[in-house]
Length: 354
Image (cartoon, rainbow, N blue to C red; front, side):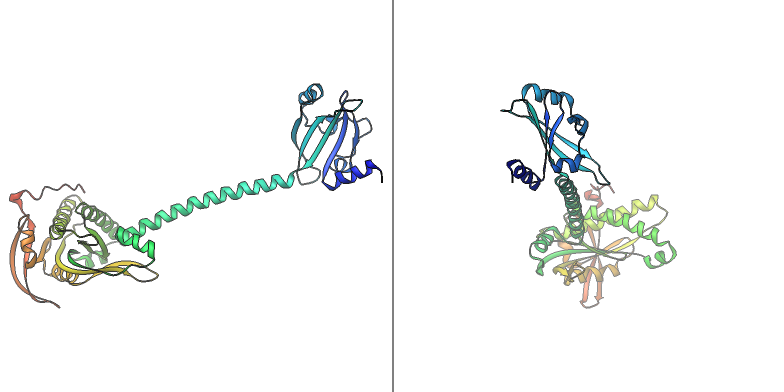
């Protein structure tokens, strides 16, 4: 096998199309088989620009005059598929007549892979952003279900250890005649009304450093003193209760639906933990919760009832009055008090703007 045949075989093996053209008139004087397969067999007197029509004539002239290398990408569509070629043209040295050496390499697969990688990268970035947004939504949802410190423990360890809090206070609100109202009113209206009211309650609770634990139908439960200890937990829930009623009074002045509520306060021990495995709910149990739930039943509409044991924690900031002893289910006989704003001390000036 001759040297030229060996070179031809090697060039074909590495998938490079090669052609030679005179620098003087750009007429092709040589081409290998890959070049002919890709661009067609040139006529005997064909020129380089005729075969590769997308070449820059000025750039070719620069190659001929200065020897500067010229690189370009060409697209051809022999059938249905578009092929992309990297073309490098340089001026030969050491030949009697200056020749342009044309090297062509099929980079279609490379460009397709690059497009696939770009598309994949874009998809990954989009999915990452969606995952981040979903993570934020889940975090906001869980923070609505449990205090932040509990959420951090749950996120880190996957479980929440039940905690006993010895000194907490609880406020429990329940609406008067809600069952009749819900039966006579469109459900979407009922839900919208409760959403507005509970949203305002959440702001009040946050203002006084309390935690809204849950809503059960028309009942609203919040606590002070857990998960972080609060020395003035009793006055905090009492302030919330006063502001709840004040908000309802103001709202009733301008809304067609009139809402009235009973409120019970309780103080003592409580246990807080996440309940459930698949549907997580942070809940509180214990004497303080039971007390608030039982006492709201004894409150008149738009009134607040608390145990006498809270009297000396509240008397400096609120007006309290004894209402006598009552038999409380599961707790026996208990002295109860009414709690209201102390008008003389100016305690009703609300910083909260519902």
